[in-house]
Length: 559
Image (cartoon, rainbow, N blue to C red; front, top):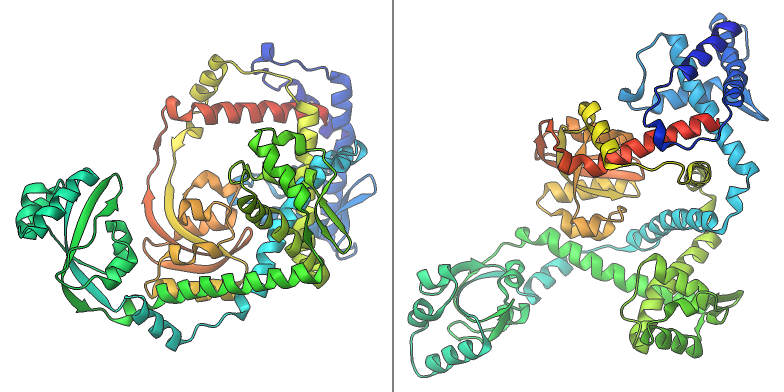
């Protein structure tokens, strides 16, 4: 058995295709590489023999199937690893061959982790920062959800009161005259004051085709539509019937509006939107009070001299001078936050504006530096970081980041790719470059199943994703307005979510679905079929895939 596996590995190594060898600069020793594989083959033999032994039922319930250094890979962990793989990544092999295949992946991963630890990659400051930021972001989302969201209750009476006070209770039939400049609209106002009819002037002077064709009439609108029509909420609420508004800015143009009729609106149309708005306001109030309490508890003080340094550095456009400055920006009961730490945070979030004025700078530093600091230390004190889910996340992120660090250390820039290489890869792998089956979805990702279930009910009742977008854990949810595009190949990154999305009916709200990072509520807007992807569109991805493949070979040789 050992001889067979040795031969098989040697053949696999020697028969590797030499793709673009003129671009590779490998300094590995072939004999050493093969011997490395032979050493691993001994571990694979352990799997085959252990697998036969387990099947006979004469070993303990969960025996190790391989040992890598002091680390043991148990049969349970191997089964768990295989069960979590997307179906498309499970090889079509016999049971024993499949176990060998998957165990080899676990062995490779463990070997790489051991090497990374030997190189002390986990002691690099950039690694520590990245790990801390990833865990902090997840803890902060859970902390805010539990400490703020769970304490908010919106009563029906509040909704009804807001409905009336803000003007949601009616729709207003409005007319408008749109002009290209302030001077033109002033001229229209003067003619109206002189007695010209609004409808007549709209036909003659409005540059909006719909308005001019209908004597200015544009139909009924509710308060939610007013901002899109460049009508401020206060104008919608307060302008009497039959009275022409003052000139209003309408994008690059100017207009005047006139309301001619009101009709009632049922509370049910806006109940969920109002509830969401009241929830957002209440959450903001609770958060502000909570942060102020934490600030007092931790005895935090902003140092005026440091704030002035920040303002001056950004006025001179020399913020890099702050990077190594140890001066305290904030002091607190157990230490301080240095200017260098502040600048590091600003750079991480790519914040360059709003820092040349002291009041704006103080607000910016509070939002991006102080508030995350307060949340982190409050969560530490409350034991959030000891939660088993957070511990698992920390282990997972640590391994991901340390392996990424090893990849960069081992591979670095050991090969370069020309345009002809990328084109050849694209031509030789047509199956990889398809506009595959895809789905366009609206989605919210929240920390708990209960919250997801509540959101699904509100969405089914007519609320929109945008109403709850600030509660989503996805970092790009607000920018994308909760709309995402998933392909089949995204299964590698989102195995559970994509499988559910592809199987869902168009238009129906689904969830809660426990997915990567939380609980998802989603609705499919459209499914599309597969189609070839032109090289002009696929070139960047082809380069990335080829680069990834060549990196994999370098890592294989390293193993």
